[in-house]
Length: 244
Ligand code: GEK
Image 1 (spheres, rainbow, N blue to C red):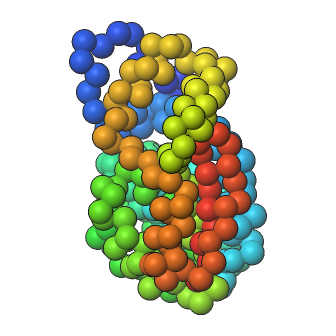
Image 2: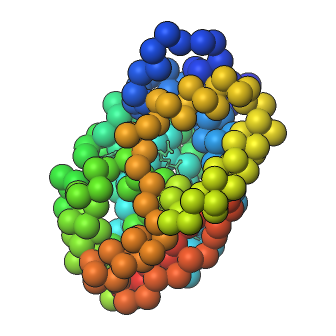
């Protein structure tokens, strides 16, 4: 079994007080398994990032993978972009970046990748044809999200595209409850116990802050994107394509 397939058992035993979730060494070591068993449609979204890369990637531009974790979206971009593109992959977790660098080094594609340990709010955005925020914006404090999206849009070429994948919340309580329960059903179908689901939920409280689809849409338009299209939804997980 490769390291990326290490089984996530972080919440398998009862914890006296569940600590707030952090992207530390323990999480990085099991992250591939964790995200595959937690986010419905994750593998499909990665594949479609490749399809999107083929449509929006332009030579002599940059593509950004923000909150790159182990580099899964980076690799999907890398194998589908035209020659002449370069990729900037950024994460502020040292444990993730260390592993990401190894995975990129083991990959044989030739598009250059600059893997950076940094906060995505601190880096410049220039000549971007594609920017990927695959389940990362949800970890930023709400009030900091607009400034980041505006800087991303300002740094994009006309016709560039942002892929924004998020866990979302629903204004309708019944819909919120139904889709949350179905998501938990998905996690159980992928082998997580009730205890694991409950403890992870409590660890993510106040760390992963979902917003409604409408809030995302309106903020993207305000940040300068011309057209906002929902292209994927499974339960309370979506991916949006925002074009400049
Ligand atoms: C994938 N996109 O596999 N600056 C940089 N990185 C950050 C910040 C920040 N301010 N906040 C959070 N992160 C990946 C999956 S995971 C999604 C992304 C999840 C990083 C954090 O360290 C983590 O690696 C990533 O964003 C979120 O396609 O765990 O649900």
